[in-house]
Length: 323
Image (cartoon, rainbow, N blue to C red; front, side, top):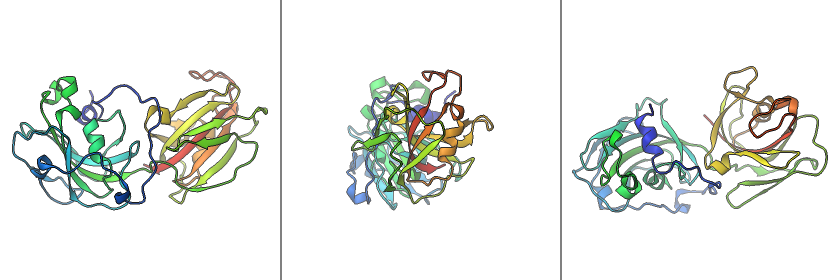
């Protein structure tokens, strides 16, 4: 059974986004344009308590609003959150009509809810968090149209079609929205990479024969923590088959970064193909890398989904954080 927060977070759309939606990182919250503004409904929500601890929340019922509103309770620091970014939060969720608590984090420092700010997450939650800063506590009153109104409510959560939702959210951490390291020069025999305005790569495979050994190039060198073997690494990636020049997988196309284990999956449960693990280990957060992985460090002589046996694979990867 799915936990209540999973139902809340993903209720807006089951359909996967068809294009990547990561935005460029802002230098400060002042550079970010919020999608949700302060308003009278949000001002009626009283929140007390320290960041990282369960808040005391009070508001009059029924609390109604036609537009989603938010109020900053505790200021944070750093750039504002942007579309496509993976965030970790503690949160308390209430039915605005009845005041009933729907869900609350443990506030134990280890079990935050993690999700991407994209079209697969509840509209009011994504919009309310846009431009919030890490370390901030915000109250968001989500209008029915940005919650469960379009679905006619959610009986499992006890939410009617005309109920607003009240979120109190502590923004604990956030992965980078895109690789932000310094541009580097890579070997001329590697595929060329061109980024669109959102940092999504286009990959051009040369007409030459594929390399026989693992080739790794650093396109951008980040200044963050170094990935160690066994780390859970937050990445965006696109994978292309060298021979066919076709994309076989892309987290950018799915609209959300993913968390992968930097370990050889043939030796460690939950790990990735050996060449991908080797490409990640030793790199720094904020880097963008390109890896050309020969069959013996990929899927070998076995078909894997849309990947034919004996395929050389090309990955471009943004290293966004270590979980």
